[in-house]
Amino acid sequence: MIVALGWRFYSADFSLNASDHSGKTPGTVRLIRDTESRKVWHKLSDAEKEEIPLFVTGRGVDFQCALRDANSIANAVKFWATYEAEKKS
Image (cartoon, rainbow, N blue to C red; front, top):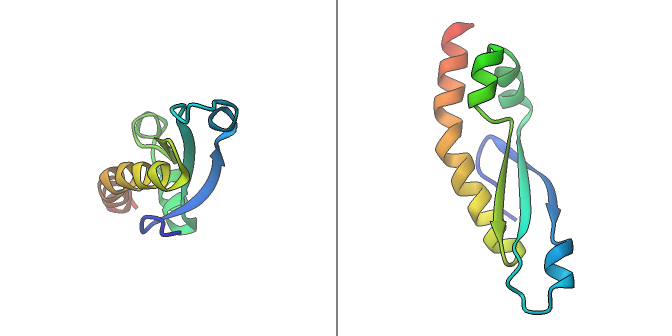
């Protein structure tokens, strides 16, 4: 399992997917920022925390699809948040 740089696996939920025999109900994979990124995130103002996620959630019909989705979301948000927070410290 490869998780985006700066993020760690947090949880996965495919309970609805397992009960739906059509295989079309998406499950979720949640990633959380890694230790260093969490430290940076906690330095943000409350307003910034509303806009910059600590967690990202990907959806997909199987684990790999949901993880790929979560990774793409994580890659889109991580650099800006880290750069802006480090600039303030």
